[in-house]
Image (cartoon, rainbow, N blue to C red; front, top):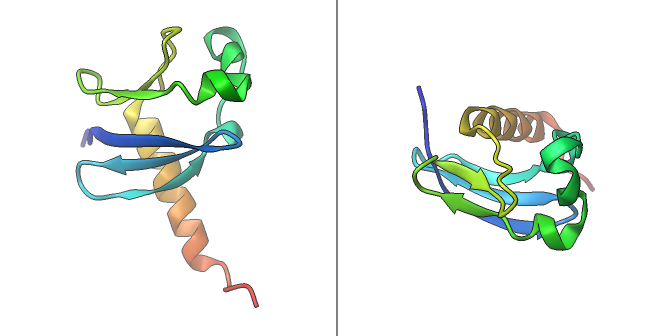
Length: 92
């Protein structure tokens, strides 16, 4: 099932807030998933990383240099992140 990304905001330190059309939403550390090589190399710079936007025709995030991330990957990474957070004990 393909679910489009409908909102994305940079949060700092290569973290982004993502919201998908089915309601899945949360913060994701993209720095943990991107290699920052090739087309992604310029995005190592936080200022360039923050230029991300949602491309409605692709249903995912993209940057002015042409880089984008498959929405399926973003969805999977976010879902795993949220599931992992649920299993962690609350900090005191």
